[in-house]
Image (cartoon, rainbow, N blue to C red; front, side, top):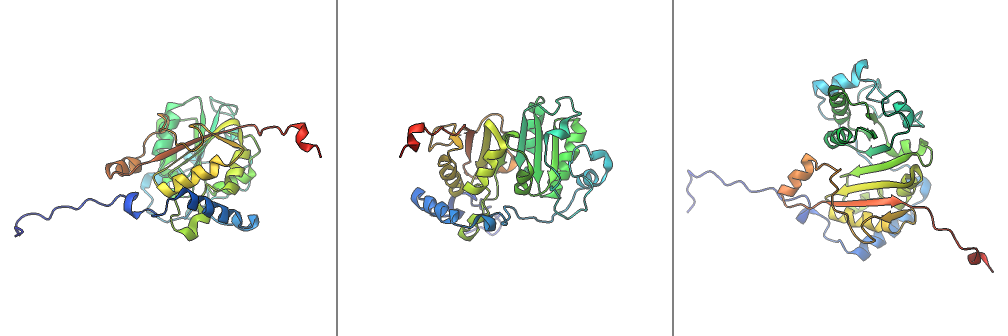
Length: 292
């Protein structure tokens, strides 16, 4: 019999990975799902948002960074109305924003898509002071917090902006970025939402165009279906070479700090997967291939 004076034991939360993941992680099924998605008309797929904006409480520090002109050097499109998606239509060059910094505009440039609250992005910028970093996000508390931390630390190699990453990429010139980072993106786990996943052949073709030849695309996720999905998409793109070998995930590099979210997932027994791909020069078609 249960002792009524004994405290009720706490039941550990189920991992987001494990039993709440899609039960079907067959490689053949995932491949078929990707092929089905590829039949979506391009003009329609371009109009599909890869993110969901949510309104949450702004801390005093974040609100100060978003509204005080003193923080304008850290937020590329500073001064917009709070609560609205940032306008990136006039941003056609990210390097120019570092022109008057110690690194200058020709330093290696990393773009992080969806940096959340910014802890790992700030840590990476601190660790690689000779590299410039730009983060794009739609979550205002994270944008404000990251700008505030950058200001407090006196970082000159990190800038953030509010807006749609796809719209930004469409504006940038080819061969513009050295690295693109996509850490723990929304997995859009329901099948009807797969079209919203950032990593699709169509969107990654855009990323490849903006990366320099030899540049790196680095993604990480703790959602197994999405990890296998990304592997399938990227392994079958001629623009990319899997740095761990086709069909393999990469070990988490020391340069990617483990986030609080990731550490919490590890405590629940949830795994994470890293994918590292290098943009390669398209293989030349031999002249004899054109022979009739």
